[in-house]
Each structure stands twice: as C-alpha cells, then as structure tokens.
Image (cartoon, rainbow, N blue to C red; front, side, top):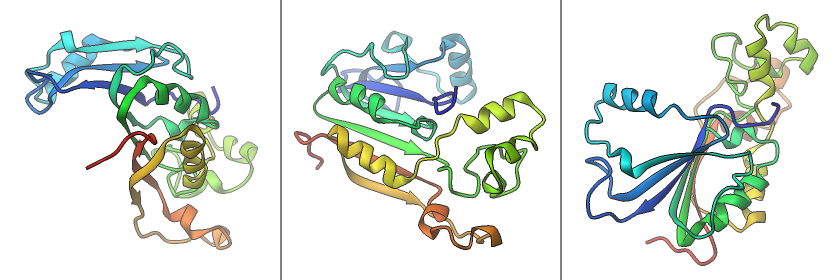
Length: 218
C-alpha cells in the first residue's frame, strides 16, 4: 500500500546478558516486529550462510503487527533499531509513538534511512530507472514507463518525505536526535532539477541515534 513499510523491520532489544546472543552481542534477547510474516527458518539459513554459527534462537523472537506497532508493551525494551522502514511512511508519527513508550527509561532508538525520495535513487528502482528518473514528470508519466506491476507498487510505496520532515516527526513524539550521520556523496545536478534544493538532492539518507528527555548518552 502507498507509504507503507514493505522491506524493513523494527528490532527491539533487551540488553545486558550473562551469555551472548551471538559472539558479538551481549543481549537478553531480540524481538523483530514486522507487518509481514517472518520466515524464521529462512533467516536461520541466511545466518549460517553469513557465518553466524552461535545464534541462540531462544533469544530471538518475531512478532507480527500493524503499521503502528500497537501490539507493543510499555517500557520493556532497552534499545530499538530500525533500518529501511521510515522512508516508506508518509506519516511516521504513529509508528514513533508506539516505539517511544516501549523503551525503558534511558532507552535508545537507532534509525537508518536510505535512500530519501529526492535523491538520485530515491525510488529504489535501481534496475529500472536511470538516476533522477523518478522525479522527471508526474506520477502518471513515470508509471507509464513501468511495465511490471511490482515496479509500480514499489514506486508508490516510498514516502516523499525529507530529512527535515523526519526530524520534526522525531521531535513531535519526544525523541531528540543526539548523534546524526548524513549520507552526502558528490552528485551531478540534472538540468531539470537546477532549481531544486541541493540539500534535498544531495542527502541520500542518514543514521540517527535518538533519545527521550530522560535518556542520556555517555
């Protein structure tokens, strides 16, 4: 559906374990939350292919939810991790409002977003579009060039939000960005976009570490 997460997942982490989840982590457990069913068997096979041998599945869980994550309980997680989710949301506030109370006091939320819509690969259709092609013309003109229904669905699934829109959403809910890394590679400005803000075109994505007012980072 338009503006909905279709690929990413929210992971919620209970931390500080006496024995590691894997050789590189010290966590009590991890819960992955997704609007789509999670194939745990396929993920375990993928982990083995990637060289993860000590995965303790007793400490890894998956939970289905709606787009607002309304199934989450309050103050039960130490950390939350989100990758490739918020670029799909036209209105990220409901999701943020669900993650916020699920974190314990001093909990943190790491967010990674890529690519943003107004950057050269913002439509994610790397094998179909040339750079910037998703911005050339109206929605109907762009869709007329797509021959596969899944490509049209993918084009419509990405939000037209900017980093400023997302920052405002974080602040509205109560999260405050404390550490931010912008992805800003060099790029060539196409002729049709000469009047577009360079900051929007040049910021392809970002990572942010968010905190609530009662949290603090060392």
